[in-house]
Image (cartoon, rainbow, N blue to C red):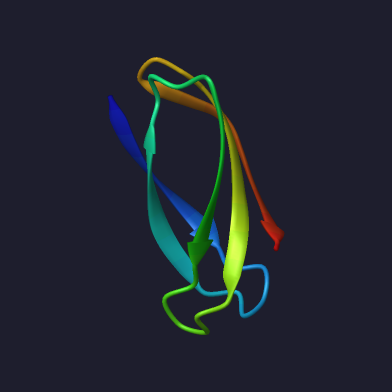
Length: 59
């Protein structure tokens, strides 16, 4: 099951949405800010249908 979550860019502060597949327990992926185009890391812990924790860090 996919869940959408709002995250804040660690560089410019812009908020955007990321979609997380909650069937995978522990995830790490890189995404680019839609405003400043800088990449940042997203760390997620999930259980099916629910995000337990989500952290964003500079790449």
